Amino acid sequence: MKRFGVLAAAAVIGGMACAPAMAADAVKIGMITTLSGGGASLGIDIRDGFELALKQKGGKLGGVATELQVVDDARKVENAKQIATRMIKRDDVDVVTGIVWSNLAMAVVPSVTRAGKFYISPNAGPSALAGKNCDANYFNVAWQNDNLHEGMGQYVTDQGFKSVYLMAPNYPAGKDALAGFKRFYKGKVAGEVYTKLGQVDYAAEIANLRAASPDAVFFFLPGGMGINFVKQYAQSGLTKDVPLFGPAFSFDEGILKAVGDSAIGTFNTSQYSHDLDNAENKAFVKAFMDAYGRKPSLYASQGYDAALLLDSAIAKVGGNVGDADAFRAALKAADFKSVRGAFKFGSNHHPIQDIYVRKVVKEGDGVTNQLVGKVFTAHADAYAKECKM
Image (spheres, rainbow, N blue to C red):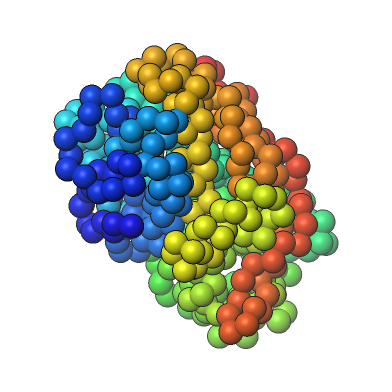
């Protein structure tokens, strides 16, 4: 498959890279995601999962010729805003998707929906967009930011930990993360720290953590931030006495490959795992590994499911995505088989789904996630009651 560089784009139709000029009836999808710089692996996984589904469908979603334009935002808000404006005004896309980071989503999604376009989130799910700033044309196929952290708050409580130190980056998803954890954790918060987004050195935070003497640590540091923290935490010697817990964002397969044995024995929560026992997931994992030579992460599964959601909705409207009411209803129906199992949308267009606990274990020369059990069944987010659609 074609790979895209910074601010580069390509049109994909019928599984082939094409010139930008497309048939008038083609469905146009604009993907804004992070393909370079910090956190690029997340955007790459989302793109690869989406492209895999599109390729499997013969370059057509819902049986309709599909133009996919992929552009790198390099994790910069201004880039994302400019790309979205160009996609809406010049390219007249029907659907926008792909954003990894909540601060970028907050800057882009309202402008997309105000323009009468649809946004399908394959990742970021900030609380504002799930609650008071929800929109009829905004759907999140991944989760609401708090969900996986809520699951770990419940799991850590169930395991009897009485004092937990909390850490997350200082941006919307970081604040949602710790709010979600505290919503279900019933013990004492030994400390609550917000780090700089993109931070790589955690020596000061680890020293303060040690001084607080908690029973456990819950952290949310996605991408390279998580890689650095887990390595430095293991090097500090704290792992044996103060276990680490976190969401899957800090323990996806790409991160584990970089972290290695330092992550063994840690626990994380996810709505997806490569070892989920259902037919759709088994087929997806095999196809993804055949195509890319690596296990799919939750980000890859979310990109894949975003494409499947669009495939189901476009088919329901016979390709007429211009009929906004019908297309919206078709998206809401979520009539597709998710690789994560049971899936449906709540009243605020965010998932109602199961949340699992995974443990990092040794596998051959590396490490991987292994399902431990389910912590929530058909879990909905806490902000739907604030959404007035």
